[in-house]
Image (cartoon, rainbow, N blue to C red; front, top):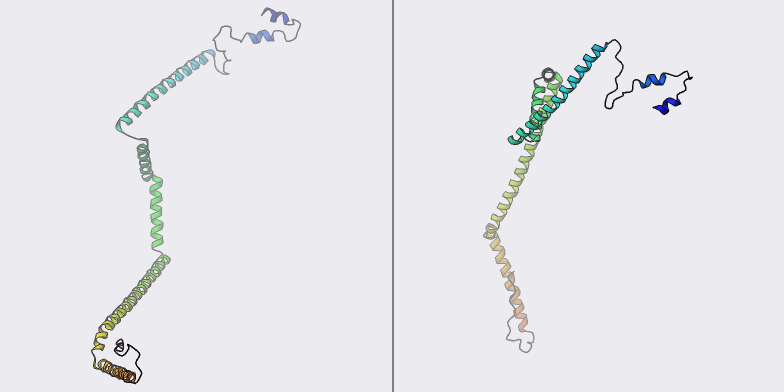
Amino acid sequence: MDSASQDINLNSPNKGVLSDFMTDVPVGPGVAPRTPAVEGLTEVEEEELRAELAKVEEEIVTLRQVLAAKERHCGELKRRLGLSPLGELKQNLSRSWHDVQVSTAYVKTSEKLGEWNEKVTQSDLYKKTQETLSQAGQKTSAALSTMGSAISRKLGDMSSYSIRHSISMPTMRNSATFKSFEDRVGTIKSKVVGSRENGSDNLPSSPGSGDQPLPDHAPF
């Protein structure tokens, strides 16, 4: 301070400014600087307000501590009851949805939608569209039913033809016409075999072949 005082020019027009400024600097360590009083407040009122502010800040700190303790206690109770965060989320969503359903806006919106739905269903355009769709559905069902009947009838005809064919073969073989045809074929076969045997008697026989009979032909 002595060296600083020696550097001050006593003849300077700004003399006294530094000394006035330095009077506001706190002298003792740890003492907060005091701001000028708010305009319109007396020193007594300012002191009362500062005291009230300190009291409120102290209450806020106390409430925060109490809230933290309550949250810890709440978490412990939930842990002992087996309540998970997911379960809490479901409960909150269910509660929120219930609150939405009972709200005035939701009720009014539901009523409005009901009125619109009634107006639409009672309109001539809706009725005509519904009748058109109903007729189209009936026609489609009738067409599918007809096609199914035709397919079933065709399969039945094919099955009947197969059964008749399998039954008619033994019957045809036992008929007189088929037996007559077999007799004629047998007669022709005998004549051909006999003519071959007669022709072989006039031909010179090869050694060792006289005693060998002609090979029997497969049945016609």
